[in-house]
Length: 164
Image (cartoon, rainbow, N blue to C red):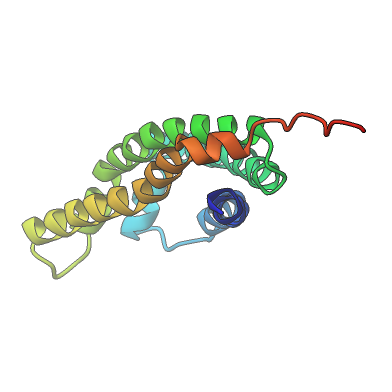
């Protein structure tokens, strides 16, 4: 049953991981006013590099998760292993990218007129923590379930039936 549920979830999250970076890329192409706080952050070379890295890594992780989801529906052991590898990579990827984006987010929020500086930094930090918690929930659950004995057993090749 876990393989069916996580197979479907892998397909859904894989499709989302493939679509979200493309939506992010499309949004980054929007022409913003020259004095916009968003425009000043999006012109930063560090922000551009981190965004490009996260887009390409997100696409690759999405393709792997989609393939693993289809494999889990077919009870393939390679799909279980790919799911475990994905989980480990995502458990590292989510906090690294989130923490890497924090200075850019804080700078953008601090440039918002009429709002106290310390308050915006606090909001950005709270957003970071919430984002990391939600971002880690699925890979941690996936790692846990893909290492359960029943899932391992379900994904093992079945011996051919004895002929009479």
